[in-house]
Length: 578
Ligand SMILES: Cc1cc2nc3c(=O)[nH]c(=O)nc-3n(C[C@H](O)[C@H](O)[C@H](O)COP(=O)(O)OP(=O)(O)OC[C@H]3O[C@@H](n4cnc5c(N)ncnc54)[C@H](O)[C@@H]3O)c2cc1C
Image 1 (cartoon, rainbow, N blue to C red):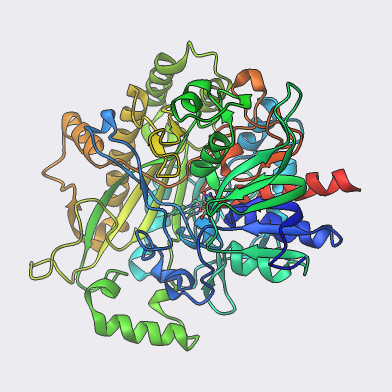
Image 2: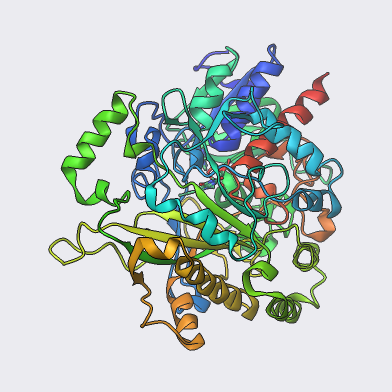
């Protein structure tokens, strides 16, 4: 196969985290098959904004970002929230913040328990390990996978107090957090290749191991999947149409890997989804599948920020001092230890009892039951069950070096400009709010309409308040207390009462960029879009392989799970050919 060809055995739509990994594995494992990977964005192999770990975040809002936002969120006082997504070869793995972790074993087992035989911890652990090459990781870590991980060699002096401060809350140090037991506090790995200290992401990890039978088309947007006829039997995909009208044939399968925001849109554009959405957009319905675009679940964050004593220098200096920034970048380019090596490293994962104490944890559980106790939805029932499982984290707190809050770094010319900060970002692992994403019926090729319904229930709101208060308690705990002089955001004297915390949460809650579930792997009767072989219901040969298939959100940054899904999908697809 070569770039000019218009027919391939496998056509993969979306050269993102999962799509690129799957394409490489299929081309390796099926050397006689031709594989096409189609990505809307460019290839950017030399882009320092992607490669330099310390430049994480700098690519948000650039040409490498689809730059979506939610619709105004009624429970966030009408605010919209950014939904950044990679639009580049490697997808969101090129833009993400490099955290490399895994959830509790019980959370992957839950995928099997909701109706997906074979998708348990054992299988996912094996698949995630195939993706991984964790330098210095404990026994059992992946050593031969394409994606590199390492605990950052730069850990700032003011972060030394992190683990001891957290241990005071009865949250134990945990150096083995990726083995299905994440509860605890640790320095966590990042997806960095330690040989050159570059970001390790789907494009630079997987494409080098792909076979010559893989063709990659970049800067090419896919419009829809094409089917043969419109009978009453299952739909058989015969290929895709690009946004420019070009038709490409797929002899065996079309695989959608456009991510949790855009995969459901592609299904809808192809005539698969809710009747009402398709009718409003004037699209002929081929398959009625009410789950398409529903079950949107994300992690939510709220943060508190502290001004460091003057003897500490945080990562903020790279933004406020151009001379230091250029010296540090030169060091990075020369392969020397540099502030630009830095990513996040301090993390804790905890259950409610550890965060708020036993009595308050029961109150949280009661709030959750009040919110969804009557729901027959399998995912919501699973979340209620997991609240009672002490091994499943409900809260994450990240020690984020530098200012990463909402009100903004101090402006040039103000007294605090040039000062150093750290931020504790708390993440709610299993919010009960769920929403949806659908195509924009008045402009089907435009930005999707994203409505996550953030904080639509009292459990989520109280949880965010509890996490923010807890984060402040951690900051107030020695030895961490001794490294800072003032709480910059929200301010110790500004936010004290529950009413004030509630305000703060409603005004500042953001997404952690982990949307999942919008083409869920679930039984069709439970709102599923794909079966446990990732095949879209009502089709013979369209699969979804990306974060959209995750049925119930997990307590981890999700890239390891996405790579694991791609690894498993490759096995499933290859097994069919053997
Ligand atoms: C800012 C940010 C920070 C994050 N931080 C972390 C972190 O620290 N750790 C972690 O584990 N996870 C993190 N995540 C989440 C993680 O990176 C994503 O969940 C994961 O990469 C999603 O993988 P995916 O394959 O589902 O989708 P993506 O990687 O987003 O891939 C989808 C691809 O499809 C392409 N595409 C879409 N529509 C079309 C079309 N019509 N035609 C052709 N191509 C199309 C897109 O351009 C994109 O390349 C972060 C995400 C973001 C955005």
